[in-house]
Length: 547
Image (tube, rainbow, N blue to C red; front, side, top):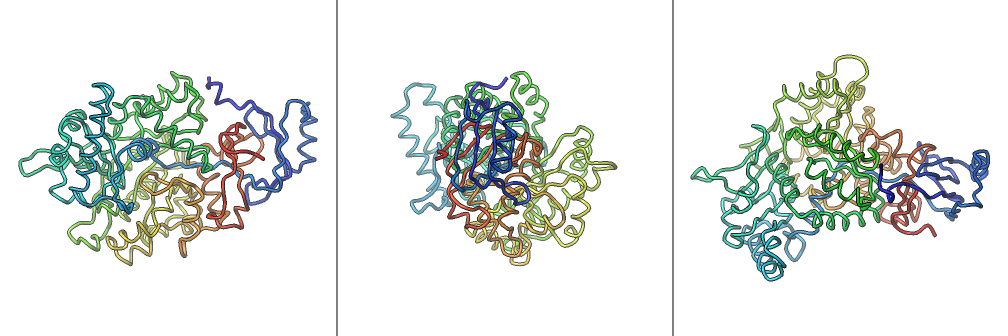
């Protein structure tokens, strides 16, 4: 049973508004009861429906005059890393300089750690806190190529306390020797990532790809639960103020799920949250059993698709391409999963009706993902939905087969803020102009009939605010989306990506009453000029005011 605070008890009648419905049409009014939309339409029709159902808005109902303002479906971020962002970035050490640029020199990173370690030595209230993880976020991934950037750098300024520093793209981490010992044993499938060694054959303290994600989850599990909870709550309040009603943590394990269950049981989890088991750790069944054991409402705290990495990111030269990097002809990146193994996993996913989320950034990794989707499905209606996360790039031959793959369970999950100029300036250098023209084929995917979900990938992107992400999708040159397409991608298509399209993502009768009140017309005004005035989840006001 859900905690009392998560059940929608309010009975509400909205009228004199512009309620954005599927397809871009609008309604004037809506009735909300028991956390769901009971009726939607003209004010007179909604009132008649209530009367026929035996309800009187004059008795026990709150009537809300929207004064002509727009009410849209709750916004859904189907791909982010909320605890990485809340704990490592917002509540951790900021690895940036005074101008806000991410640190790209070893000694600059060491200076931040030295200052933080000294401050915490004097402020630590007890021995347990003095031995707690010192975590931070944001170093430039190019530092991984610098031989001076190693555990010894951190040992020199913080030898006793474990230190864990996540890179800007969240695919690399650096730990000191105390941290390395705390993380043991660190197990991961062969070929899914790298732990670089020094000249003597010892770990340098760097963790690349899967080892980093496994380590991040271990660090979170070893932190005091209340430390994690408070960091998440600070993020959650900002997320609600931005209009988010549901989010997906796309890399999780039982330890992280227990953190969320604690918040859920205490009535502190306001957002709907879906946690994706990290495939290499084989934790899908343990996480499913954990949720059943605690009788969690699957529409408040449930599982998302199982997550696998196929490669890294272009900025750190780990995304896998058919051709070499423009600025480093010695490498074309690498795959972190064998194509035959991936095909087998997709086939098993269809048999088990288990959705997958496949991280693929380079055109080679996208290609093997499409191959696996094509070959892993045999006949009949696809049982699993296979999401390609990021879908940065696609070559001409693969573009031609998109329409047929749209019928085989393919879903695109894309983060428009990744092609903001602050990132493109770097990506343009590493992949070159020709591949840059193919980056993020938003409109092409929609034309091929593939559902496109927009999301943030925060903190690997600068913002999780949906209106800012939508603004980026509207500016993407020939591949830009229309305002209606972008809103649909952040609501209905994102619900589809989470297999919740029959209860979330629309203002529709019988759906959960999740909605956002905006200051203006989302179909006609620039997203940058819009403000979120109120956010409602299951009929309960979680942010702002109706008046």
